[in-house]
Length: 173
Image 1 (cartoon, one colour):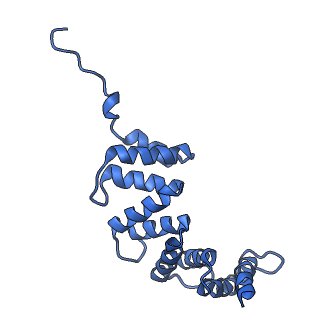
Image 2 (cartoon, helix red, strand yellow; image 1 turned 60 degrees about the vertical axis):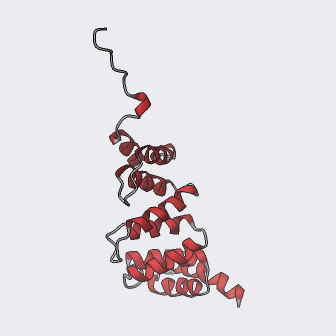
Image 3 (cartoon, rainbow, N blue to C red; image 1 turned 180 degrees about the vertical axis):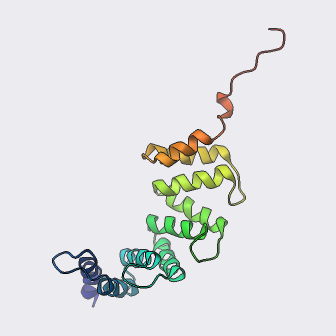
C-alpha cells in the first residue's frame, strides 16, 4: 500500500504536466489528492496550490489553507510561507497578521527568500503590531542577498540606519 501512495503523486504530476500522456488536470488533481490523503507532504502542497488557483477543479481557499498547514507543521518552508501569505489577507480566509508573521518567521529562518522579505516588511511596518525597523532591515537584507529585487526596493524605502546618520555639527563650529 505504501508503494502505491508513493506512485500517486508522480502519476498525478504526469497527468497535470502531460508528460507522455495527454494532459488531464482533473485526473491529475484526483491522483494528487489520493497522495495528499495518505499524508505525503509534497502532495499536500501541490494539491493546496491547485485548490488555491483552481487548477484541475474548484477553487477552495479554506481547504487549501488546511493542507498548507499540515505540510507546514511537517517543516515544509514553502507551505509555511503559503500559510503566512494566506493569513495575511485576501484569500477568502480570516486575516490574522500575527499568525502570518509567525509563519513568515518560521519559513524565513529556513532560508525562504520571499518569507524573509515578507517578515522584513511586517517588522519594518509593524503590520502585526510588533514594529522593529532594524530587525525588518536584517530580514530584508537577507532576502535581497538572495536576489529579490522587491526586497532591495523595500530596503531603499527604509529610514537610514541610526549609526549611518550624518553627525550634526556643533553650533559655532
